[in-house]
Length: 216
Image 1 (cartoon, rainbow, N blue to C red):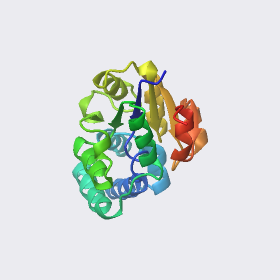
Image 2 (cartoon, one colour):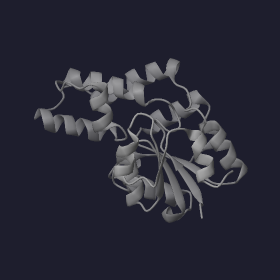
Image 3 (cartoon, rainbow, N blue to C red):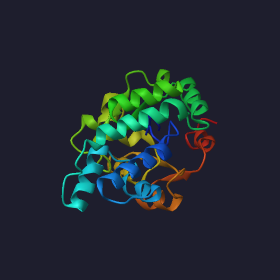
């Protein structure tokens, strides 16, 4: 029985992952590790910026030499202010969940400021109120289960009765480790990579989700 639905933010609620990964690829390359958009999606999508920078520094064998997380946030927010939109169909899904009185929350690798900004720009903030949870609140980000366990605890739901919507293999793995049912949303990540990570179901459009949740 579904007691709550947990949403990733980037790539699930808001169409931000292409912007995010283009910027991150630029900055990784600037730091000395040549990185394409496709490589950024495969290596870093769904993870916290701090953890991604640690990976880059391990590969380089030295510090990146500048405040990459701060520069990433600055460039991303500048672009998203003009370009960011909600994922097609997600507003309809949120309305159905509201009508059914199913609690919802956000569990994202973004910083609290990034999450708040993206939800406000797209007008999705009203659906979540204070129930937005950042990986900065836990010791280990995705693919560890910590963030998802925190989110379930804060909204008062057993993880086994939560459904998680995720678009990255790292997030899928974290959700499964937390004991949640996971629906993989295959936008940038290939469906097979989400299935391999353990997704219970994979969709390619938000319009497919209501039926899986028993809302239609």
